[in-house]
Structures are given as C-alpha cells and as structure tokens.
Length: 135
Image (cartoon, rainbow, N blue to C red):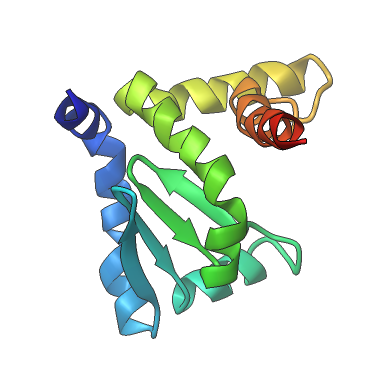
C-alpha cells in the first residue's frame, strides 16, 4: 500500500527532484530519511536566504522531496515537513493548487495566507500536539 502513496505524490515529487542536480553542482547535498529525499545547501541556501531574507524559508516540501536551507534547518523542521509529505500523500498533484487556493481564501478574508492556511495549521498543530503528548 505504501507504494501507492509514492505514485500518487510523484508529480509534485518530480518538481523537487529537478532541484537535486543544481544543489549538487553548487555544493549541496542530499540523502534519504525515512523514505523522503532531503536536499540542502548550495544554491538552496542562497535562494532561501536571498529571496526571503535572513528569516526566510528553512525548508519546503514537494511530494517526497524536502528542500532545505541547510542540514540544521532540515532537522529542525523534519516533523513539520513530514506532515506536508502526508498531505501530499492524501492530495497528490492537487495539493499545490489546494494549498495556494486555501492561502488566497484566507488572505481575502483578512488572514495571513501562510500562518492561517489550514495546511500549515495542521503541520504546526502536529508539532504542538506532539509536544503536548510528551509532557
């Protein structure tokens, strides 16, 4: 059954796979953690910092590929990004348009398109719920 999740999320994963050779050629690295390809460093570090400032993106998920600024960012966001991997497994290629439409809807209603996006709330909520359960 797990195979089906990889097939269903493969189209957005292909987008993430396109970044790997560019990351490698610019000094970045990649590895597989629990069935997810994690890529970091090289031009990704510059892109995530230059485009979005000092507090820019730490990581972004595209299917079963997580692109990160550096190894530390991948480690610190791993639980959050794994929620997005599971969302891709549910939504498949429909995840990206659903995510963007949810952000637009939230923004049109006066909310923050990132923090109030239901997909992000689920991802951040998982961390909060997980930490609460550990206490």
